[in-house]
Length: 221
Image 1: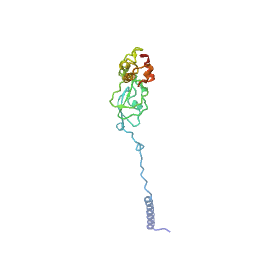
Image 2: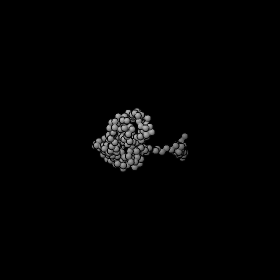
Image 3: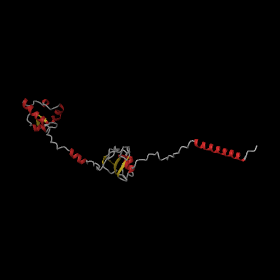
């Protein structure tokens, strides 16, 4: 049976409308795609602190190529300071430094030269106050002059000091006899009417057996 042209047109229109409606429904019900965020590889990286943010400030002086003030991170060592100061200069004596020692802020690291008058080896780095000059060792002549004793009093001749006649000043010239012991000898002699033997001197307060044997050659009754 042949449909009228009007009927065929209505069926075609209904079919097209149904197809369009189905396509629209699938597009609406389909979930929207999630946005894709591109993360840069450098976005999570932590940038190192700038030079001005480094907490340790050390004055590097002496036998280095670029002496001056430098900043360092916590835990930096003497070796790091040498590197930042351009490395050791000619004549630097590095075996007098502990290159593994940690730096201290506000101090000075002084790199010695072979001509510096110091014989210490592997000195621990303790740091000096910035601006403080290196300590100059005292010469042996200066040190010895301060320790020099007064000229010794000449010893009396052997057998020249009489126990029963000498004064306290005479006894004080004997080696090891102090002014107090010399007075004690004179007082003992006065209290006991003199000495009867050299051995009796051992009864005087302050005269030990060793001292008696030391001064015996100079004594007589």
